[in-house]
Image (cartoon, rainbow, N blue to C red; front, side):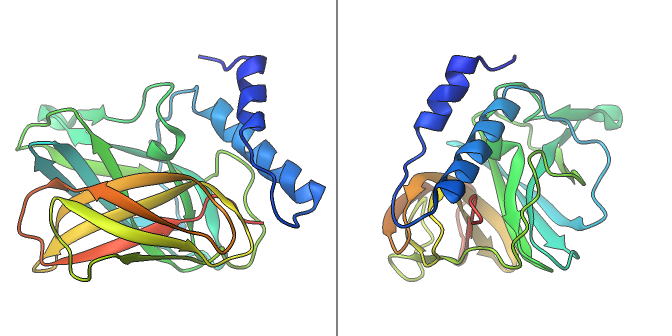
Length: 242
């Protein structure tokens, strides 16, 4: 469904203009937010994978509060990549693909990878309230081209994320996220992955609507999947680049 002009203007109005940014930088961030807002109104289906970003693992994590799919990614590109579309789903009998994030009006960052650094690796997390069969085999496909213009920075803004309580691996994980860069972040994506014996067993995701330069925020992430995690990995993917 196409987004109305008034809705796009509302998205632009949500951009908070702070600090010593130039008007040009502020306008660029507003345009990026608006383009993502418009793109989320269309379906996202990726059938052909990227040659730059490979999927090294996909885990379906089932739990009573919902299911998660943890997708381990690795980039061979020599520069940062951003806004790559991603399709996730499960294989039905006969090899039929059931897409879980293909519909229109799905939250943008449940259909896109916000960013990945040059020759970087990360784990992207998708969550759903849909009850998936235990026998389901998950899949993920990353698109080759960004949905919005590619970033031209040589390195991504530095975002730090750490557990508030070291070693916490329960059904809820509290983390402290700090924007250590000079770029304010909007819709910052934060993921947590619980591991046991090197295997993904639980995962959660959260969004910080705005995190200014030098600012910190504490988040509670609900972990979906099984119990028994003995360690946790944390990811914070920048969404604004300059």
